[in-house]
Image (cartoon, rainbow over all chains, first blue to last red; front, side):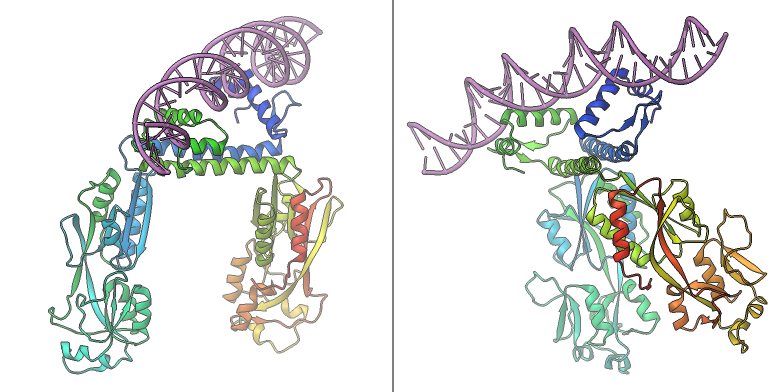
Length: 284
Length: 284
DNA sequence: ACGTTCCATCTCCTTTACAGATGGTTTTCA
DNA sequence: TGAAAACCATCTGTAAAGGAGATGGAACGT
């Protein structure tokens, strides 16, 4: 590394005997020859070379610990836990988190991605600091919400489904004749949900499996546009033309929420601004 | 962790004051409150909880260091470096290495995968302990070779190539009319190589790019059968029927080689047996 | 109310880490 | 070839750190 024990001592501001002695005790405790001392200047043995890189790994970890401690002491929140509802576009979130790690490499980030409604619940019960979700009309006072973007919704159905070849204008009554596939909060009491039109609904927690059922033609439902764009382009799904916003809203707001009683830390505020900077122009 | 400082002390066979003092000095040096001492028993602060997991990471690394040192002290070679020629089937190698890591988790393994001839060269100059390669007839005394399997060779050509529609029996003379794509050792003097038939050869170091050129119909060449099986099945390549083994050998032996002067370590011997246990029945 | 369990703090002792000095060996250079 | 320089091992003494043990006060359970 430094070429000689003496040079190492100069580098570390220690006398040569300290280096020599430290290495000897290390060799003794591990029962290994780490240096070949036959020459003028000690040379790594193979074991020494391999273990030195291992030791450097330990040091790197220890330094990471110190940096994290210093960052926390300097005011950074120790941990930032984020809950994301599953239909939030992942692209901007991933980019935002990547930039967050660049800006705060010592910040421990925890991420929950779960079904609909879970993000809000986690923020409410303190399990997560920041939530990214669509806001149901249950807005209460203890949650602070910041608008991020609008997700355009597309009512879709498989081309094999009767609704795809329906010629009449799609009124609420016609839609009600068919099974509607909806997202549901598993913990919420199954009651009259938002924008539920059909009396016969199939409930899904996972948006991906709902998409599977839509593709298979089991019913109709509204999907975030960015998730079905490819399927629409390739014809595996067709869009239902519903003009009446009273039946189905054309878009839904995406918000970052957090508990008002617990002010956001430095990292959380930075991420919030970063997420607003992100272009949320859909795509993945 | 243990519920209280006293309990932690009992677990670590230390008196309670030692624990208490150690944690206090840690808190002082980092300038952080790690425990909330307001209650009867100290409770982690958020910073303490996060930093504790970080500290456990450091400990895991340190334990890995100790285990590696002990393994070496017990006789395991400090490092096992393996050089593999690029056309050796990767499947059995990957399986063998995975099992090696299970059997010897503390063994540092280094892998080189390079063009033809590189494995033998690395073993020769000491850069690698073990080499997996086909043996050219340059077998010398200082290399010990262990047979692993035979790789069947398939002379192939793109279906668009004139040779694909050749009706005459494929003699050496007919083959010689076309460009032959061969693998070559970049450091070897370009001389009369093994099983080179055509006077016009295109030389490749990388077997993957040679396959590209074969698929594009630039010439003919012999490929390991397992690498072109899919292309043959789908008709993107056709096999040339050459019966004369004097023109082209039907298969080539695959060997593990090492330097006789440096006896193999425990891990290397284990891997060698493991590789012989592997079914080398091609596929990937 | 009393015993138990917990923590913080103090003192004392052992171990460890390091500095400084010494002697021996190899390399370098005149 | 011979002196200077650089290197290492080893010894001794000292400062710092780590841990043991004792003590006192607070919280908890019975």
